[in-house]
Length: 208
Image: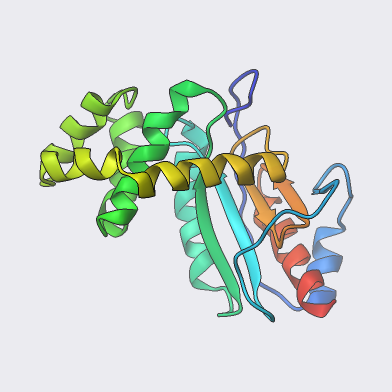
């Protein structure tokens, strides 16, 4: 997991359950399994929906390992639970990776290139540390380099990077992977309990 000070990582896995089962299974410990935010974070979902944010970085090895677990978990969620991924920016070195994510999103290519971006870093040893680096990689994936560069530098992508930083701060994120739940809770990576705890907190929010 990326931390503001150092790197380490944990992953999680769980299945969606009913409220009593989820709470009993998780046996939640505030301050250990999850943190309650000091003040509510903004959410972009409507009434009856629960927003879940996955804070990640392409350079985090355990975010890479967590990704298939997260993807499988997302497939089982009820439609009322809305998941969004948020690339973190603990310092300036993260910005090219944040812009890469939002550029792929804007170009409609997250579906086939999000996982490939992870693999590029952790299996192919690509270094996404500049516009030139990420644009060269994108071109190898068949994207038009000029269009990619223009999108990367666009006002829209810049705004999303700014919003990601605001959400990161609002959720008091200091490590990845982490899950933000409903503008109220942050679940840090904690091996197999990460998504179990998320399930329980989602159930709690839905029953409130």
